[in-house]
Length: 356
Ligand code: SAM
Ligand code: TMP
Picture 1 (cartoon, rainbow, N blue to C red):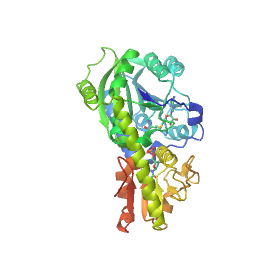
Picture 2 (cartoon, rainbow, N blue to C red):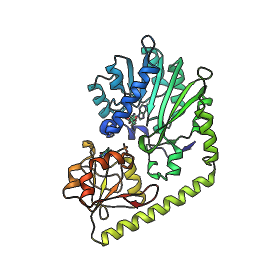
Picture 3 (cartoon, rainbow, N blue to C red):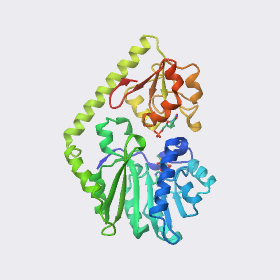
Picture 4 (tube, rainbow, N blue to C red):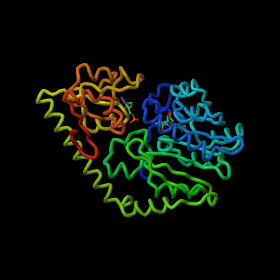
């Protein structure tokens, strides 16, 4: 399992001022509405089904489940987003999911037919306690479904900016299969999803409860061929990341010398990784704009780039926009056609530095 060595305590990451709102992106809203539709049609069909979501955030998935009148519980430690979910009619337990929380849910609500998590399980260092918790909570034929950034995409797309304090674990199909087996589960299905530039949806069931789909051995074979378990792959990744840093800083310095204005687009966690690793300060990129109201008026941690509302982007348009929220590129570029039409250009830095 690829994972961070240093752990930032979870209470410092998820709290009453946590600022990530999943529903901020139309793509995310569509993705999770579709996810809810699928779960309602396939897994939540029995008599009085029950779903628990770990990291339900602002209710981007569970709002659709609540609307369908299905019994559900979101487990969410960050009050900021839990409140938003509640305002949409979602039931939320404000807590960190672990073995103890799972046992309390089971005593209060009974077993779950589905335990779901998206972009959350990879944030949890006490993954052993999570899996023991799922074991305590899941009905005999239930499924634990989670969607997370994929190590293969990070390595092959040189998406080094996916590496930051929140992302403790970087799953591969090989590592998830081993982890599942260790806790009495079986990895029965894997499916790529396009979210965040390329993720995998893993489905775990109790051993023997469900047929293992051909996608599992197929992807494990592919990971072997792609050398995703070979140290040389990681050494090469490190060298490519260093080259990106060099190329990006050279480009930004050259543009500044030529009197061009460059602003950042999006202030996701990824932006903190890139700006700190490359030492990009306001002298190179005077601000970033971001659509999340809670981030506006603040500074990117470490590099201290000011975060402004999207309106600042067109007032006036810069010559270049450095796209930090590259996983939302289609949505952003469709929205910002006037920038392009006026001669503006996008700077991207993964899988290599290029201008589009
Ligand atoms: N599921 C949404 C999505 O895919 O966009 C939100 C993902 S957000 C990046 C991660 C969420 O997990 C945050 O709202 C955070 O507060 C929550 N979280 C972190 N650790 C958790 C834990 N141990 N149990 C439950 N939720 C947790
Ligand atoms: P994420 O990559 O973690 O989903 O974060 C994306 C960030 O980009 C988030 O802070 C919101 C911001 N954003 C915009 O500013 N404009 C947009 O159109 C989209 C889709 C996201």
